[in-house]
Length: 305
Image: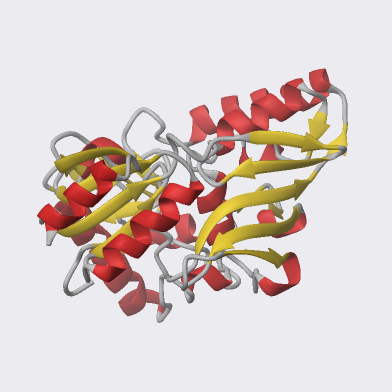
């Protein structure tokens, strides 16, 4: 079936393709086994054709942005990984709104809009993912989240037809959206509402926050960002610190000593090392505080996670 997929993909000139591509090269944790097929679609039309082809051949597929919120297992993914951040990267202003491809980098979008004098994306300037991933997670920081600025999205639905969804249809809540439940829908384009502002002031805000992140977060190590959501009424890092888990380590993975809500790759970590650390933290907090710790990082290609 993979041979048929490859032949059809190449014949239709749908983009770039590689076999047994290590996903550790495409995740911010720098762990993960290979994908049997790894593709970069040339555009959103090609994306729809790729998904249709995979479905017709009964091949599993996974949409990937920058892999910033993903823990891929060490095993081979017997399917197709579709990377978005190299192709769906268009950006167009419509007054004070901006229409962007789902593969656009959060950081680059925030900075480019700031330089153009548009405010509203400052909170995303430190999120190392794509705007599609930010919508998927309703990403947020500094008391602001995607739901505050989004107008709507264009998706490929379960029939690989392009559809427009208004904000009210996205079911956005704390780190949640309809796309976490409708995994057969794929975000291809996002429309955001911005405000006119001073480029110098916006850049100053983002640069100040960047310096604070450098001082308080382990940015020198590969990670997936915050490992856990804050339980209601608590801060995840405080619970982890109070449980004595600062610096807890398994193999090459460990709880950061700088910010305990980060599980980092200290060097040579396997995905299993990272998963073991995350599981230990969850079990410890459950036993100590009676609280369920919900991980922000998505486990992918795990049979038991």
